[in-house]
Length: 375
Image (tube, rainbow, N blue to C red):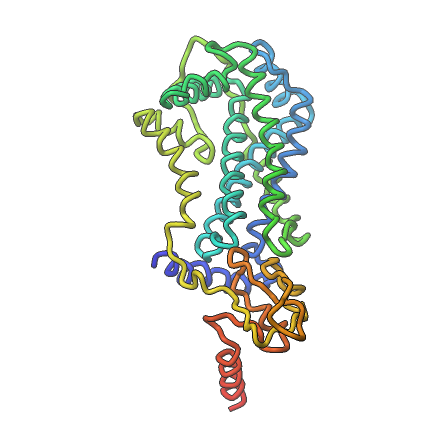
């Protein structure tokens, strides 16, 4: 299988040698899900400062960005940090998604984090795209026109989507107001979906070690200082500029359209990405599918140790009527069971087993390992 090959030949060796260099505690591959949170804070703080000076009208949008870029103290630094933090967040989100996929942690009891992760990726994509439009130089105007035409190519609802983005059929002050609203309002959904994303993850790591944070912040500031963002020419609404530089993390559909791709094909690809990611957990077969923890009824005393130790809330204690002494019995929810085996270790009565890794087999392997180590 391709995923298994990539994991054993690329992911695991890369993590191993990174551990050798920076130690396991500071290995960034173990914080791939937490690192985007740092960029979220950078985007939020820098965005607030930019919002304080931005004027969302056709007449004043470009002058306000020019004032931020060339006149306001540290204004261009804030623009640069905001721009590179957006790219940084997308890079780490994609790396996080790839590692979760390669390590087979995206289905069954982990299906909710995967689905909410796809939604979060879509939100980031929309927010980043609208951010580039708000610059409102000639390239941003051309980007807005391309995006509007791409939306119009969607059957049945295309013109409605375009009108939603543009605030009508023509470019007016409402266009920038609408784009700004989308840029600010949609991220509010991130808080809800982030909460859902962490909901089914036991002890989620949301903050990397301080040293990693400092290194990333330093790298972000260094890139912003060495490669400050520029502002294009004053916009001409009656003119379309085909030769524009696009950030491919957020504007790859527009780039494909400029390369001559059919608009319908491009929008089909845009839709295929999230839909494909949504159905991916159901396409690949899992080796241990259906082999969740099993309760041995004759041994279960209803002590609740497995119930308290299960980190995935996959075990419930139900009333029992088939035993004269014990009033409770453990019941496993297959949808939540992670096959982790913690319940097996918690049970003192050998009343719960994982079919693929029964206790007797595990103990035998431990004994063999101990003998080999002492020989």
